[in-house]
Length: 404
Image 1 (cartoon, helix red, strand yellow):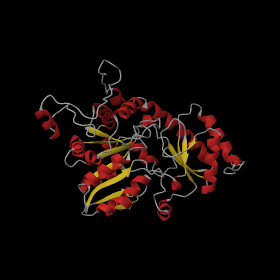
Image 2: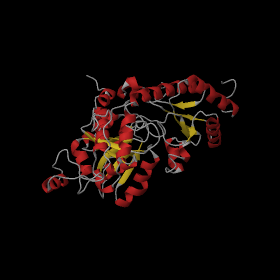
Image 3: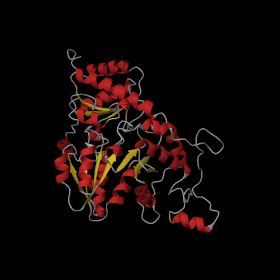
């Protein structure tokens, strides 16, 4: 039977303390014990169902972790206070001084900055490669390599990772394959394709309302226990703890994720096809012109579509900025970073979410300053949205009248 992630979320079922349809929120930082021995056993990680201190876990964060674990098909999950609060502990749990990792060159700017600028201070070094070239990935592996890291759909260029191919390389060299699935929740299930660890920024599609930040790590029970260890667990010791109220809020929003992802995908696919037909250089994994279109179809949970992210290139930064400002003025969305919101969000990644990447590196990876990254919203009438966007482009001479 094929994996059905939305069904597994639906089957995640907890009553509230007084029979509520939502689990009760645990409004406590610390928890009592009926015996001193039980406290000791909990510190040692030997007491099931007992809570120690909310930096370690709480009922509310565990409920959310269980639901996302069900979605990804993992044994366990641990939620954190941000996406970076999930990425960095995983990397430093797996890599110590003198170790090495291989990473995609096109990744979220914050992740790139951590690997390029901060991790070397701890003598953890990274080789950045074109993740779509499996030969280059394998060639970058050394005897000190501990992990391979990439995003399913890369930020911001929307390159697609061959997860099965990467998993084979990782297993061959006894490495961990760590996947950031923030751009493609439900659409892709990396653990089912051979990945070892999956990370999300919960801030984005999973929460969907842009009112909080959060992260999650999905993996084996053994690895999650290592992250939570009071003695040497990176999540426990770095302290990026999610608040119980926020965990409860995200859990409620998670219940509608399947509906939202389908609408994001439908709207993005509609706009991408229209923009490409108009002659704009458009990148969207659901277009046959995308170099990894056929690959993506082989890893996709098809009912959820190709996702809500697309890019267009309008030629230069001045035109990109003018178009984004005009679209915001016309109430088509917001000139803002992040993604997964009910309204469309647009930004020029070279000067925003990828600004941590040096300009020469941006050019090497094909990130031009005329690129606009769109996180397409949940518009009910996407044809109306397209017509208004097209009019903005015509007025700014981005589209020629005869092209339109």
